[in-house]
Structure formats: C-alpha cells, structure tokens
Length: 550
Image 1 (tube, one colour):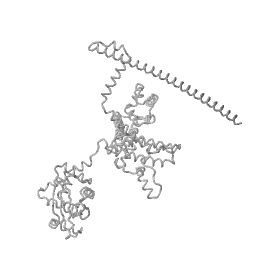
Image 2: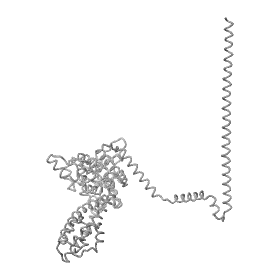
Image 3: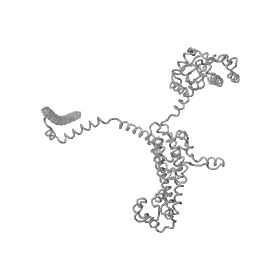
Image 4: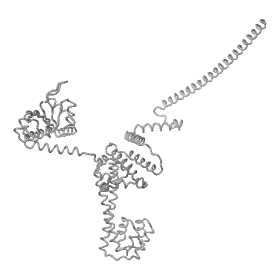
C-alpha cells in the first residue's frame, strides 16, 4: 500500500509520495536515522504536487481552516486531482498521512480517502519539513522564512483579535490599581495628619475623614490667621456650622507649635497631592463600574462591581472564570487556607473573595456556608452568560439576585423559593422582549407621526363640528366641500331610515311571533278539550254495555 503525505506550509499545500518503506520496515528509529541524510530520504520520499497560495490573506484563511480541522474546497480539489481515484465498493490501495487527526477524519468523511496519523507519519513529515526547500526548485533562499514570518504574525493577530468593548484585561489592571491607590492614599493621609498635627493637633480629633482633613489643612494653612471671617467658608467645606465654630475655637487655644512659611507650603503641596490622588481614585472607581457593566453586566448586577472585578482578576480573565466550576469559584482567594487545611487534614474554607458580598454578611452563622455555595453557583452561571452571550443584558443577573434573596428568606423565615426553571424562563422572555423593544425603537417613527396628525385633525373636526366648516375659507373648491357635506348628510339620513325600518320590522315580527304563540296555545287548549269530550263519550258507552250485560 502506497503512502501519500499531506504537508501544509506557509507558501502552499504539498503532496509527497513515500516509497520503499519495506526496506526501512516502518521502524521509527530507522526513519529517524534516514531523515537527517538527504540522499537516503530523497530516495524514499518524492514530491508529487504543490499548490501555492494566491495571497497572504488566502494563506491565512487556509491555515485557519486547517487548524480548526476543516477541509477547504481548494484542498479537496487538490487532493482529488493528484490522488488515485477510489472506486465505489472497493478498498483504496493507498492511504494519506496527515499531521492532525482532526483534518484526517474530515477528509475521510467528505472524500472517503483513508487517512492515518501516527508516529511513523510524524517522523516522515519531520524529514519533509527539514528538507522542504530542496524539494521545490523555484524557491529562493529567504522566501520560505519570509512567508513563515508573515503568516505567523497574521495568524497570531487573528487568534488574539477580540471585541474592544469587552477587554477584561482593563478591569484586572483597574482593580489592581484601585487596591494600590487605597493603600497609598491611606498612608499619605496619615502622613499629612502627623505632619500638620505638629502645628494644629486638635484638628485631627475634630475631623476624622482623611480627604476632608487634607482639604482643611490646605485651607487653614496658618492657624493663627484663622478667624471668624472664614467661618462661612469653613462651613461650606465641613457641611456643619457647629464643627466649623469648634475648629475656629480650637485654633485660638491650640497647643501646636508654629511652623515657618516654607514648612507650611510643603504641607499644603502634600495635602494637595493627597486630594488629587483621592479624586483620581473616585474617577477610577467610576470607570471600573462602567467597564464592569460593559464586560460582565450580569455578574456585576448579581454580586456587585468590586467583588466581580476581584473574581475576574483572580481567575485571570472572564473566560477562565466562566470555565471554573462553582466549587472552585467559591474558594477563589482562599488557596492558602485550602492547602493548609489539606496538609493538616483540617476543615477546608467555606468562602474566599465571595465573603465580601453582602449576601454572606446578611446570612446567619450556621447558614454562611450554604449561602456561599449557592451564591458561587449563581455567580458561575452569570459569568458564563456574560462570557458566551452576544447581547449584553442585566436581566439574568437581576433574576439570579432575586433567587439569592429568596434563598436568604428561605433560610431565615422558611419561605419556599421559586423553581430555577420558572425563573430562567421568565428571564429569557424578558430578554427577548427587550430585544424586540430595541428593534422597534430603532425603526423610523415618521409614518406614525403622520397618522397621529391625521387622528388629531379628525378629532378636532369632530369636536368643533360645524364651526370648522364655517371657519374654513370657501376658496379653491368650496363647492366641492359643500357637495361632500351634503352627500354625507344624505348618507346619514339613509342610515337612520334603515335603522328605523329595521326596528319597525323587528317590532312587527315580534308582534306576529306573539300572535302565533297565542294561536298555538289556543289550538293546544282546543285539542285538550276535544280529547276530554271523547274520553267522556267513551266512558258513557262502556257504562251502557255493562248495564246491558247485567
């Protein structure tokens, strides 16, 4: 049985015929030894046909289909032209060696060409890859390397392509930056407190908020210059007049030391930096919320933007989170505790990052583990919907949140929750209705406006009645309007006459029906009377007969 080899390169498809395999005995070690030597390998393997790609785009499409295990039309035509034809009902006297078993099975399904993919075929294909430049004569020394490099770049770029609006990497970077900003802002705010407390120590006890403290440190500057003239501005900053008065009184009787103007300038600059950082932190938080609503709207509506972002960043991406089972998602972030428990054979952790959700905090101590398991289940469903659905909606997340709320009520009060099938059916219906509403909103509303205008004009005419006819100028077709109005009046009169006639006929019919009913009743009565008379006559006759017999 002859063996043909299909080899896909960056420049085109090539078909090789391997002969003299009986001499090698299909031994892998013998093949490995013969691969390195071109003289021996050239006697065994020979080029049968070569089909170059038309362009770089064609090469990318062909290689993409090969990697997915799909045979293209060009490859099918190439194989059918250059391979021996297989007769129906007979076995093929050859086989085709391929590198990937996926494409081999697809070729066999469509063309009935027997394919094989094993170590022996891979070793021969390795030799073909090694000596490919020498098999094709027209190739220049650097052409194959350039084609490989260009195709490699385009193939990688096509594989890495994704939707710009659903980049979960931005969420990962944003949540990391938010955590570092929280630490930095806290440490810097503490530094401002310590630095300015040398000058005004009483302010730290009055104002607890770090951002507000930095604002006041920048505004007050030198405590000796603070007077009641600045009371209104202080109340605007603090939002409380009593606190502002307390700050002014504390500045008058402060125990802090005096600072030089240069030191106060440095404190002011540092307080301004802390304020800028905290404001940037707020903006970053808003950006993260909007980004989470774009990337994972259902997960964000179920568990919150911050916890959802932490889950995505810990898993590595949204797809990785979607691939995680709910048991893994439940203990994400508690890996150290899990492995310590496995090592010491202790109790495994019940929750990881999910613990920051409000649902577990609201659950009782004995139900926290159950709640964490149920919440992880719903989070895995929400992440899969967000990852693999094309249209982003928050319907499923809201419904899943309702289910978690119902489960909380079930644990606390014993209220039976709804079934998951009913909830999901309702969510699917709502999502479909939203899609249809969006489509109707996108459609142009011009004809409806025209219709509404016509309806309005008709209603106005009906309300105003004859006044409208009088107000309209009888120019350019006034006679025709009068004729139309007369015709309408005539039609109305005819309708009224017809209705009256119908009523009269109904009345007459009713009267006739009553008379018929009365006559029928009379007939029945007369019949009954006749029957009674006949019965009396028959009784008289019977009596006469009896008397005669006696």
